[in-house]
Image (cartoon, rainbow, N blue to C red; front, top):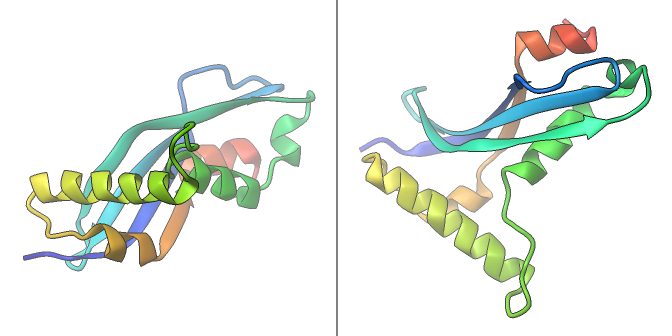
Length: 130
């Protein structure tokens, strides 16, 4: 049975407002298996940012990568839960989602994997960084 070797978030331009003062992107969160194939973990994430007229020139790849990791991570804790509770529940959800796709996964192991972020060519071009 395949195993997960790393997690990957692919960030791309979203169909929303992407003018000179606004940036809208999607974040597709994936598990990369040992055979190189990918399985979707989360496909409903993304964010929109507003800023100055030159927002695109001042936004760095590192800022986008950092935000992407946050966006696909666990939610903020509620009144009766801690950040650790939320993180554990998040990784348990992702592991169960992988199991439904036929991939043996454990939450604790997933949480320790390398998390890479890739920016699509369209996004890199919009940022002016090939």
